[in-house]
Length: 114
Length: 114
Image (cartoon, rainbow over all chains, first blue to last red):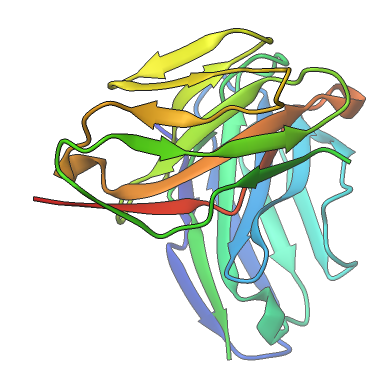
């Protein structure tokens, strides 16, 4: 596609349930990033992929959060046993992979944990 | 660690007014600096960037100069329009571990009234 796409656009879940968020990067972009935008924390980095590997997982807030990327393309962010503080907009970005490359952001998935 | 501090909003201006949104950074070395914009209902978009000290980034009438003496990257526009109403984020790029993670400020909401 022309840009980064994410699905679902909105997700409402009950506390304790697992959720999966999907990101389709721009074709040919080798680097993929997940960020979280929440009222209390602003925009924060979660995880970075170069190809299928994740050399930097330092931003994941707890072991309930995990992410994978397959085929150097689609990525899935999984949150297990969701908590109310997980409510946020989850943003995905992709880039060509060099250190100077611009990141292009998707529209985000708005997650609400009741 | 690296961080960005930007002027808190909201900011309300009349059309054709001069805009300044302050941004200062703390970092080891001189990382690339960015301004991203989020228009209502849309995803984050890169507005401009400066990859090294003394560089000036510009786009759509906006400018920001990378000033290492004051560790600042203030965003300016000489004459704002209603269509500039959005949330503006200052960010720096952390290149630790070969990644390109972005660290964002808290965002400044700008409303331009006719």
